[in-house]
Image 1: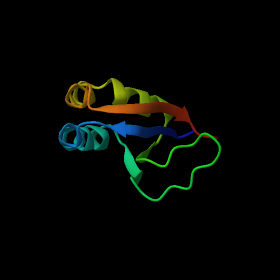
Image 2 (image 1 turned 180 degrees about the vertical axis):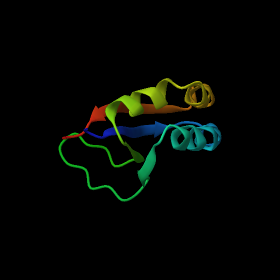
Image 3 (image 1 turned 135 degrees about the vertical axis):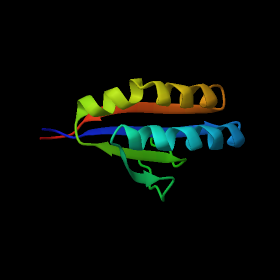
Length: 97
């Protein structure tokens, strides 16, 4: 079974305090859904149209678990805390089996 991944890039953060509040809610929600944080705001070398700002990578045992974690009530509450505080490119992708 192919793993699932959340990939988030943050071109802009307008309210760091709200981002922190989101992280405090999102972390437990992600872990409850089986997610494992692989990268959080580490070094980035960007090419072409890439961005060098904050990038987050989270791994799940399956694509379905990744989608379910995003749709969970706990994670949806975290998104409310994040609302309006960042510009974010968020994707759920399926790995190669």
